[in-house]
Amino acid sequence: MVLLSLVASHSDIDLETVAKISADASQVASVVLASASPIAGAITLATCNRYEIYCEVPQFEDVPAARSEVITHISASTGLSEATISTALVSKTETDVIEHLFTVGAGLDSAVIGEREIAGQVRRALNEAQTAGTATGSLVRLFQSASRTAKDVGSRTSLGSRGLSVVSVALDLATDLSSESDWGTKKIVIFGTGAYAGATMSLLRERAAHNVSVFSSSGRAEAFVASRGGSPLDEETLEAALETADVIIGCSGSDHRLMAADIAVLDRGARPLIAIDLALTNDFDPEIGTLESVELINLESVRMAAPEEQSQSLREARSIVLDAAHSFAAEQRERAADAAIVALRRHTQAVLEAEVQKVRAQHGCTAAAEEVEFAMRRMMRQLLHVPTVRARELAAEGRAGDYIEALQTLYGLEVEVPVAPSVKRKESCPATEAPAKAVRQAG
Image (cartoon, rainbow, N blue to C red; front, side, top):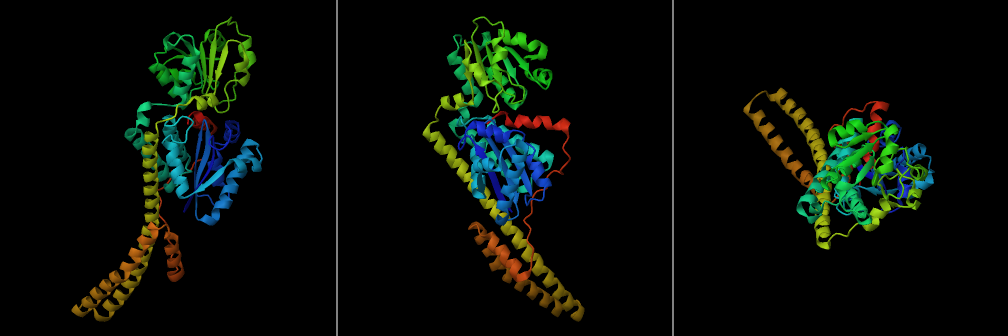
């Protein structure tokens, strides 16, 4: 099996294009698995500055067809041309896939280096794929290993102690722009109830903010504040809250966009307003930033303001990531070798048992028969020693496929690399699809 990832991130293209590709593309993994594509499993990772889909295909020859299938379905779900999507998506295979995901999960490929939200996004992406039944065993192990690596980076380097995130940098910017640095005096309105809104609420509590209201266009504000604090808003109470707000924070990425005209008609007088838009698809009309007494902070602002980490910490973090990626790749190769060895031993064992039965049928349970059987089994172990050693040597060189192909050619054996079972795929239900958008709320 071969790992393949298709990546569109802020590192390669602008955030607007990433947002367009991400729009309504959360179901692509399920769709491509239901199609006639060669894709055996898929996991989607969509955050505030990236859209990535990780796939597993049977062999390298299937990579072009798998890529084409993903592009076709993203095009169908977003309305963008296949040419546009193809240009935006960078393909990676095998070791490059592993290293990239481990780097992403550790926050080393984020707008804010070392950010902590992305590790949670990687875990949630895996959980959603397992629930939907789109994750193969290899993909499960890949994402679980990425999560462990992120923990190692956090605990073994100073990146973890900084506690930086997109939200924290945005709040720092807001503090700099405000005439009053005390968050305890500010009236704040949060748009959204997803994972990103939860992270925002936690950081606001750390800054002693206590006058926080939450609006959700999907009506989940009450449930959100019940466990996280704050006051719920609905369509009727939102306008009054906006008239007195000092800070508004967009975390939803929903179709409900606050327009400049909505703010302009409010009876705010000359009260200053800071609008923090952290949604990839923009919760706030960009024209809000042109209004008098309004300051707009968006993801691009955060990226520009993000502090550079110390070179020593980055070197340590990258070393941890590379070591973990190489170890995982080696484990994958060893699994292929183990499967080939098992297949060869089963084959030779079957031949041996057949011959042993012939000896027993001819000579019975005599001492001579036992000596012959012992000699045959000893000879078989000796014959298998060199092929077993060579299997592991070739696997270490990344050539397990050559060994498997040789077994298939010489013995006609079909070697199947064992994978952990995935959750049984189930039909999607509109009532359970809404939380999928929360995956886009960080990273």
